[in-house]
Image (cartoon, rainbow, N blue to C red; front, side, top):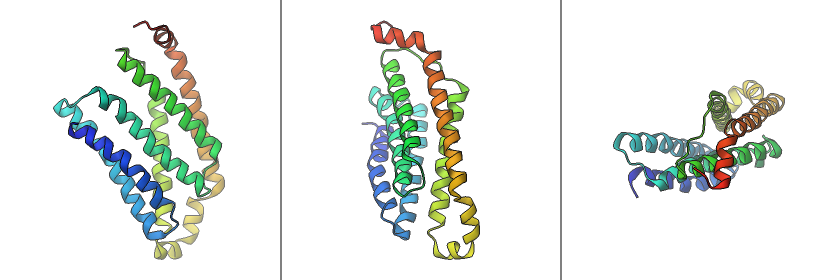
Amino acid sequence: MVLPNQLTVLRIILTPVFLFLFLTGQPVLIQISYVVFLIAAITDWYDGWLARKFNYITEWGKFMDPLADKILTSAAFFGFVIVGILPLWMVLLIIIRDLLITFLRIYAEYRKVLFTTTRTAQLKTFLQLFFLYYLLLIYTLNTIEKLHESYKYLFAILMNPVGIYFSMLIITLFTVITGLTYIYSNRFIIKQLVRGET
């Protein structure tokens, strides 16, 4: 259990803590949940840096690190579903797609087979995270009473339901399309894995 793996475990532990605080509806606890999320996100960057710099790369880490990332981001997306900001069907499509591809990649790495990663898949990840961090930041700032009262109209624009819906719709469609493209691009490798070939 090297340090990067310990940080991965910490990220998994922090996920339900974040979600619980986020869903309390209490401004102070929501603000704390944002800090918890940032700490969890930082562990993602830091454990990857440590693993590469000191060669702390284990089979367990290869499996759990990407899975821990998906658990954290999925929890945040579900949190916004529960508070009524994001549609459930969009979030489910994103999570199912991401988990499917993540497990495929993990299994491929276990079988010593490399999948082809496209730039569109990387762009998908960037768009998802950018949108998620945007929602978390604006939602959290809106719970600060002084900011809410002073910039009420600005928050109404930034959290406009129509704008959020269509932004999420674009990200969802792009996520699904990149998932299908990813599977098609690696279809021969997937067939080999299904047949037990390497």
